[in-house]
Image (cartoon, rainbow, N blue to C red):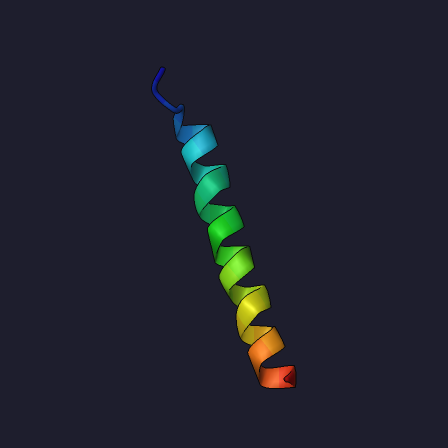
Amino acid sequence: MTKTKFQIYIDEDNEFRWRLIAANHEIVA
């Protein structure tokens, strides 16, 4: 089963948010 464009967009958005949160934690820590 292939992912729809919407599902791929959500996956990319989640990865972006995760990296942003990780970067913020590194700055705080």
